[in-house]
Length: 117
Length: 110
Image 1 (tube, rainbow over the protein chains, first blue to last red):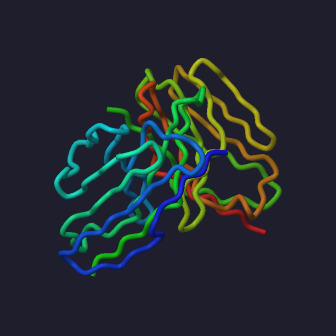
Image 2: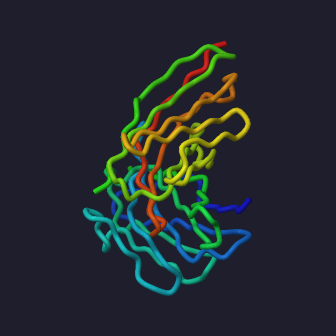
């Protein structure tokens, strides 16, 4: 099946710094990538949807200036958490869709755990 | 908008069947999915069902869909300790966007 990787798998940073998380589709071209946020023992909340070469579409309540998303190629999307604060600590998961699945499947990365001190 | 709800916890004995339930609100959902998440990991697609289907079986997994009641269930036959995880149902439309339920934590007792 299709493989999606994320890097780093975990990161600890100081408050006020920026952190970049990469999401890569390893064996297929991802026309659409999604970024989710998951708090402990809670569900995944969609943050934004990005299509290659165009601006991301953010869900209501998600600050686009704080969570910068770039989908520059068909295999790479990045999420940058700018000026991170402790409340941004969370598990961030990306998914990718290649548009070839008959059932709109999204392939999920393993997630990145962000801890802001 | 779409709302997807699940019970939070289920405990079963090894070898028994597990049934995890899910309800959704948007009747235009095209696909309904079941994902499994193990601790500290991403999501693994277990199975899916198209909205015009009533049932789908895949080895130990059986998905039932009651479109009238907007109710989805996942039955795991002969549940094993390796099935212990969080199970999410998700509803999707033609735009690829998924709305996830809160997840059901399945604990399988030896």
